[in-house]
Image 1 (cartoon, one colour):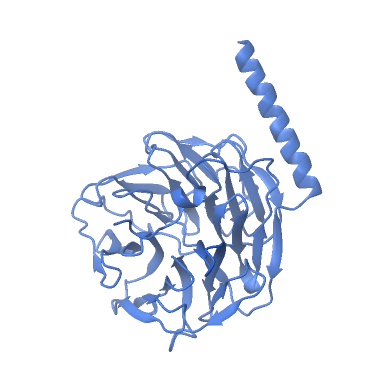
Image 2 (tube, helix red, strand yellow):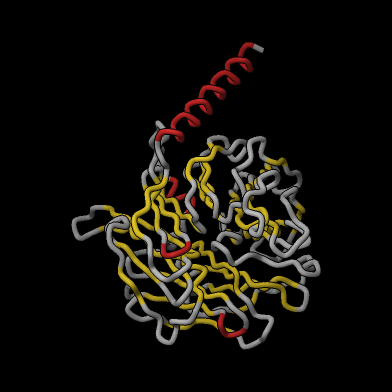
Length: 374
């Protein structure tokens, strides 16, 4: 009983400190804004210079064909161009180095495309597109440079999953054993956050509309389970917008209703048993949240149009930090993270935790795609 009381006291003082800190200092610092684009995706990866010194590379993309890259932690940005792509809406990006990245556009039929660059964005190779009117890509994720998946809205009653195993050729994953989509159910191409590949065989994706559901496969898509979460749902603008899962059966989701961004009663939930049961966060974020990223095993950040939040206890309690309008977020570790939003806004994460990761395995190694180890 005394131990429980001590734990509660520690938890109280942590959140008191967190609330006091957020009132005095912002957790996000805007680095640039004003570009004619709504940035929807951001990716970050560590690279090494000629002397072996590690540095972060940040890629971001959005509407009006915009793709940007920074080699100096966001101080300056290089505009990249996809041939004949100035009208595309690039809603997903995944990076592996300063040279190699995938970018995904969203839109009906052939407006949804997957490109890849291996020369730092000087040239982009179109790897996949489709002329069917139902074809609409929502998110792209990679486990390795050669092993990636892209999620699309349902076609013939089943969600579309495209897969590459060589980093060049994409094909639809069989969906015979996938549960059918509900009428009007879809995924949100809002932040490149509704599809995750947390392990060698694990696939998670989240949906919205008539239900806020999580689809889960533990065997690379051979079999599936689907569970309904308690997040706000029931109309085309509501549901899950971001999902994070790991190999310890923990799943965290955030979302809400993007047409009612201030609504904050059912916008975050956690499952500790692979989605079998769900619990709403006891301390909810401050409204609709479109993206979610791990800092380390317990700490996370969420971003949305009316502000940002942090959690120190795997999503059980969220605390408001800032009031920026942001769509997507990428965190390498506690010292390096970026979020992006409308009007070309790019903000860097400012760590206010009295903590630095000291494990032999960094958060980056656990949560970002990597080159295959052979």
